[in-house]
Amino acid sequence: MPATAIIAGQGDLPRLTALGVRAAGRRVIGLGLRGMFDEAFPEACDEFRSVSFLRPTGWARAARRAGCEDAILIGRVGKNVMHRRRFKFEMLQEIPDFYVFDLWYRKLRFDRRSATLLRTLADDLAERGLNIVDSTTYLQDHLATVGVNTSRQPTAAEAGDVIFGWSLLEKTSELDIGQAMAVRQRDVISVEALEGTDSMIARSGELCPRGGWTLLKTSSPGHDARSDVPTIGELTIQNAAAAGCTCIAVGAGEVILANRPKVLAAADAAGIAIVGIKGDPAASLSAANRMDTPDG
Image 1: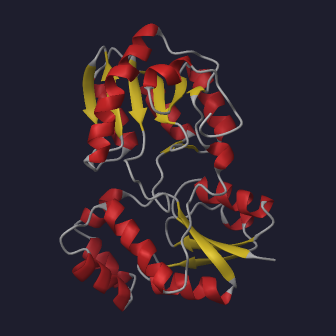
Image 2: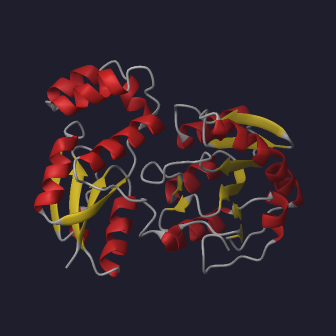
C-alpha cells in the first residue's frame, strides 16, 4: 500500500489530513514536530514518531525508510517563533543539523519571511528525495466554497464591507503584509501582520468595541500551497464572536475550514455569516452555496 508522510505542526489539521489520506487508500506515516503536534494526531496514523523541528534531514530519512512516495507539511508553526530572542538558544537545545544552519544563515540570510522559509524548505526537501505536495490535497471537503456557507446570510452592511475591503486585502496579501483584515462601515480597523489572525482579531475587538465588523481572510497571489494554507477553525469563530465580528469572508478554494461541519455549526451558533469569495466579491455574495467543489 502506498504511504504518505505527514509532518505535523500545531492544531487539528494534521489529524484531518491523516483521515483524508487513509480514505484515499494510503498509509499514514506521522512525523510530529516535537512540542507542537496535537495529542490526537498519532492515533490517526498507521505509524508515528516525533521529530525535531530543527532537523529536517531526519524527516526525509524517516519518510524514505517508511517507503513514502510524498509528504505533507501541515499545521501551525507560529510566525513569531523565528523572531524570539530565545530562538538561537532553542536551536542549540534541539541540536539542529548542519542543514538548518545552512538554511538559516546562508539561504535565508536576507529574507526570513515565513513564506520564503517554507518554500525554500519544501524545495530543498524535494532535492533530498522527499516530495512535499499541496497540503490541501486530502482536505478538499474542508475548503471554503463560493457563496454563503452558513445558514446566516450577510447583511447589506456586511456585504458592502466585503466588497469594499476585498480589493484592499488582495493588495496587502500581494505585498506579503498579511492575509487577513478587519473592516467596519468601510473603515479598515486592522491588518494582520506578524502576530497572526487570532491576535489580530483580539486587537480588532479592542479597537472596535461596538462590534459589527467583518473579517476578511485569503491567501496571497501565487501562494505556495505546500505549506501555510490560511485556515479558519472553531477557535477562530469563538475568538471572532467574543471580539464582535459578525461576518467572515474567505477565499473560496484557498482557505481551509478546519473541520468544516464543526466550523459552520459554530458560526451559525454564534450568529456569524461565512461567505466564500472567488473573483468578483459581489458575484460571490450573490452566488448560491455549492457544496460539491471548492470553486463552486
